[in-house]
Amino acid sequence: MIHRVLVVDDHPAVALALKVFLRGDERFAITDSAGTAAEGLERLDGHDAVVLDFQLPDLSGPELVRAFRVRAPQAALILHTAADDTPAVEAVRALVDAVVPKSTPEAVLSALEGLIGA
Image (cartoon, rainbow, N blue to C red; front, side, top):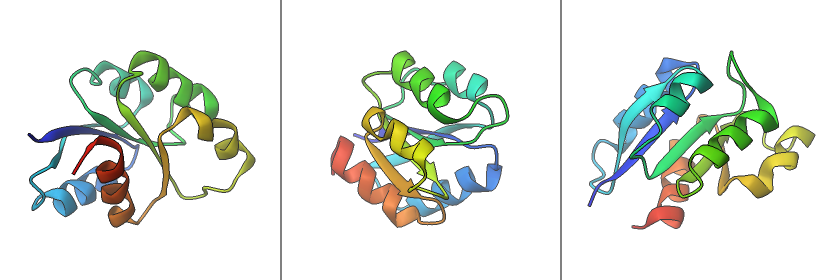
């Protein structure tokens, strides 16, 4: 079974890089991406996991994380951020399943393996 992953990031290159990185892995596939919170929330259904940027043009920080957690409580929520030790990230750490650094696709894969299966 391939687990469907949604990437929500305002930089399209992030979703593309993760898609390319996971291309050879038969367990996970980036099946959709969105550049805003609104688009991501619209495309959320049917995904097993969400890789979520912490700063989006239309919503950011704790409000962003809460919106995704409320809308899809069953989906693994992976916060993908450049700064994982800020007070804002600490404030939402309990609402997400993992916090991984940007520019580290291996950390995203590791989080996916730990959260939704190998």
